Length: 374
Image (cartoon, rainbow, N blue to C red; front, side):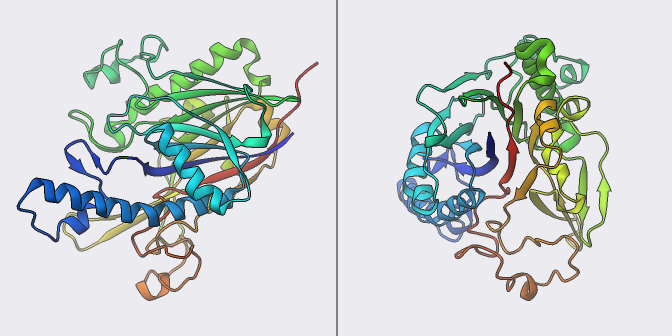
């Protein structure tokens, strides 16, 4: 059975115009220009701004999903099942040739309420052919991934290991079966008294070890021969692509346990300079210099059985939803605004910085899923 499988961090697909006491990051620039003597006035204006911004953004998000032509798609940063249904009904299905259904989402651990979610082509599966198991309550002790590095972060063995969830989705495809592990690992942000990529490394390492443990526990000695995929935003990378196209290895990644004699990264079918799904531009503390880097944060990791059946998988990274400030060719020498803003390689209504489909790119792989063994 041939399938197109995608993953996409849709960046805050939320039904709320504020996250707790603070506004959504997209509304802050406009709100910063005005004084609001009364809190109620500010709240009303913020909600209006959020709705206007969201409509532009979500049409672009839907275009990116439509371009994947995916049979199955894993999504990250989705608020709840209701907003997922509304988004597909009122945006994706107005643009895409595929009609999706079988929507799944379980509320996880993220304090903002952003979760991982699942959708599949409605005609792909019979009703009841999708079974879901959430692991958001699993602890470090439960999945045997507690270590000294976590203890230094004041984390206890009974704490929950997944910062969002690892949503296990089993599909009965009739002639074949497939199990997906939908992930969104800890972001590279402040965590207690540690911050940045190195400061949060231990948390992502534990999540990766926990995912591997789940797979080995489910399939036992048959894990190599089973059809399973780990996919999602793993929030780490093994190399940076710098301005000019130079590739800089970054040493061990937090998810190495998932790719060392375990699963195969489908994006390795692409040249190394094309394996990127997110872009950063960091200005130095003195404000005089900036560093650009393209990195891969989003992954589709194939089981050994799937990798063997697909030695050269067809892989696409959909980048037309990124803002114009992002150079789509890391090797291009010209980084000027006139050059980047006139490339005509984006969807209609994409802006210089916003609106955009997301700060991530969808990744899609087309593979053959081996039939059930007799």
